[in-house]
Length: 314
Image (cartoon, helix red, strand yellow):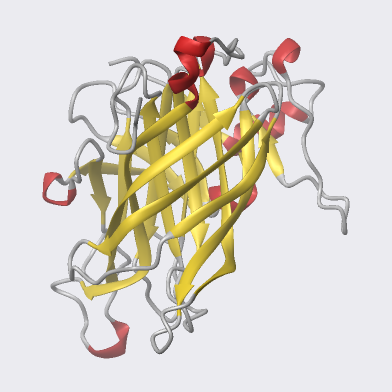
């Protein structure tokens, strides 16, 4: 497996020294700014990728495995390792479908960070890392990359399904179960619960817009059902980056009436010829009435022509 490197801190340093040698200037997207502060809200990477700060969270870089089931190196601001990059080893007990799990915990007294990795596609890759919390706070985030630049599809009647992407969404929340061997009481570190769902993302490359939704959601460890989440209509830029807001479908327990509540953010990339692949990251509030609960998630897939996902229809 090809070794692929992303390092946010290093990219920021070289960008300040007269240009970024890892960035294809021809494909370089316009870096968006916060309209209120004027500050940039994303970091430009190779192949025109924009890493949006909301979904990147505490993750600063990753080195994917160079061999099947080999370790990964993850740089996350989570007090996880004694060096900036921790060596995370495979933890197959936490795999979910195609998403491979890695973990790191220095001692029983320290935070346990679980990383879920998708590296099976030709171009798009992603990693999601979360600790379940300790000392009343948690750390989490992720990064996506593409090895092959995005090209915009041309619509024909027999290729409309190329604009749909469906598969399994996987995530982690900022709560879970105490890790074994800890100091006990309120000092114990926590291993994050994982979440899953069925996802469908649709894109219109004439309008350069994207939307989607996640249903069938639940916490894997407890089987507790979670509210559906919707990807409100967002924009796709010329390099194939996209972002938008998440909305949670809340249901009134008394009347059964549904309503949408702004819950968070999504961001991602299309990759390869004719936008053949997608990688996306999510951060949102999963539970109505509990603003302290936060979920971070991930989705990667080929389009519905290449891979017939659970919500792909002809």
